[in-house]
Amino acid sequence: DTAVSQTPKYLVTQMGNDKSIKCEQNLGHDTMYWYKQDSKKFLKIMFSYNNKELIINETVPNRFSPKSPDKAHLNLHINSLELGDSAVYFCASSRTKTNTGELFFGEGSRLTVL
Amino acid sequence: ILNVEQSPQSLHVQEGDSTNFTCSFPSSNFYALHWYRWETAKSPEALFVMTLNGDEKKKGRISATLNTKEGYSYLYIKGSQPEDSATYLCAFVTNAGKSTFGDGTTLTVKP
Image (cartoon, rainbow over all chains, first blue to last red; front, side, top):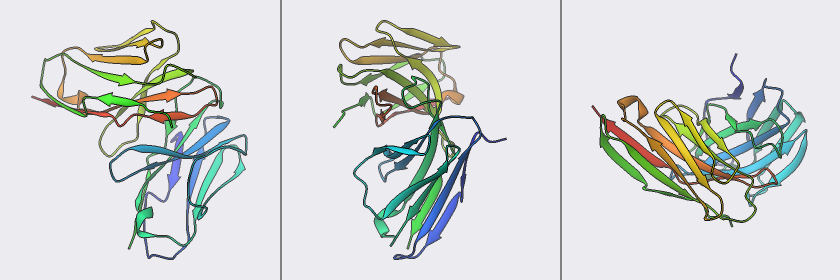
């Protein structure tokens, strides 16, 4: 069983559309994250949820809205997609928000906006 | 804005060479320093979690040291093998649980 799984792995869509990426973790972790791998291959944090509560919200356009129905799931919804949203989005989880433990990453979802 | 810097950006070595890279981070609000290994087409996987000044961790041929007072960590690979080729990321973790990643060092080991 994959510890952190994201769907879809690949997503190709037109500008202006709305799309979602789903993430689930079966590790029993309290905290989940969304990271964006930008064009220079750097990992930048977007959001973090701890037990369904938003705790980190970086400077991200409000077209991006995370939703955590329970602590095992953190979905990312993107409205009115733009060309610049094309990137690989990584979901991750950690045991707790203040734990020094490492992040466990999903395999990434490559979003291409045409 | 937290500044986490890694050097060098890329490194090409011959099989059998030993190598090391640096991660520099702020010396305030330190909670932990993580090292990750990121192979092409895969997701980052944790190598080490380091929390105390002076920590030294080892996993096989790979080891890491931590100096929180001066804000740096070194990752060493002894006798590099082609399978060590990957991008090595460090992440500075604050007590709010936020991990800020460096830009990575991409290692290529030639047979």
